[in-house]
Image (tube, rainbow, N blue to C red):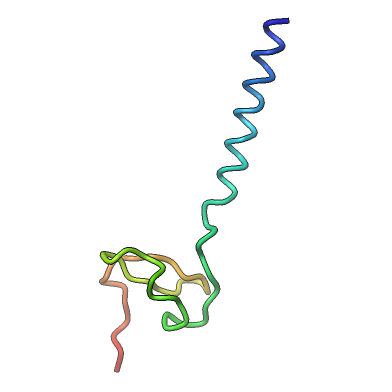
Length: 67
């Protein structure tokens, strides 16, 4: 009986890890260019950039120059 209870607890923890991992990229929005991304999406150290039609946080060196 004790082994069954331990197995059920371990199974609940194992399944909850997958549920938490599914929500990793919840803050990513769709975009066509970098200027479609919200500026307040990242911290003040990082810039927002559009990569493969998704807004992501990146370092300042990837930000395109505005003409």
